[in-house]
Amino acid sequence: MATFSQLLGRQLAEQRLGQKMTEGTLIEGVKESEDIYKESLRTYEEAAQQAGLDIGEYQTKGKEIDTLTTLGSAAFPVAAPFIQLAGSLFKRGRTKPKFRLDLEQSVPGFEGMLYGKQKREDLLSSIEGTRANVSRALEGSLLSDVLGLALSSYGSYQLGQGFGTVGQDDTFIDFIRGKAKGVSTDV
Image (cartoon, rainbow, N blue to C red):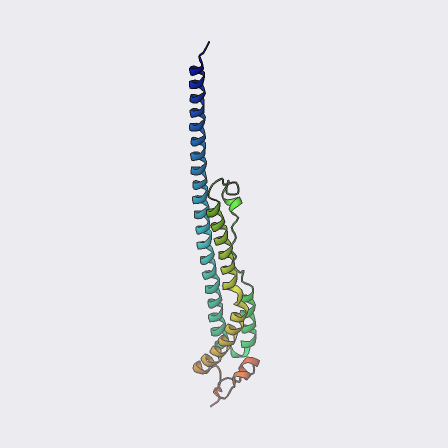
């Protein structure tokens, strides 16, 4: 039969073992949460970078459409209203980029992360801020498209006068209406 001191010693040993196991579990949980957070942060940074590239591509396509519209209208002043309309429709038809990221889907374990609650909340706040910034960056695109159309039309008018496809007596309004007479080639 065990003595009281042996029973007490065994109890203390079991307690220490349990404490060590609990410490190990906690350390493992913290490390796992830290790994999940790092993966989440990496995923967010990649998505934000892609959104920036998509916005740049969207703007570049708009500038290309403006340039082609300007040159086409200058070369063919009679068809300028139709070319301008087509350019406007092409610009409106572009797909606006969006920032889409669902960390619960992209990073398994993100929702159930045990430790690092504040880091998780900060990252979710950053994601919402990025969504708002992308949306704000594209808010004025209708106004931008209308101004681009007007500037493109006027640029076409001036280029047409410079190239000789629009007569010096033709007004900008005549050009927009497609009634520019052009340069007379009569001798």
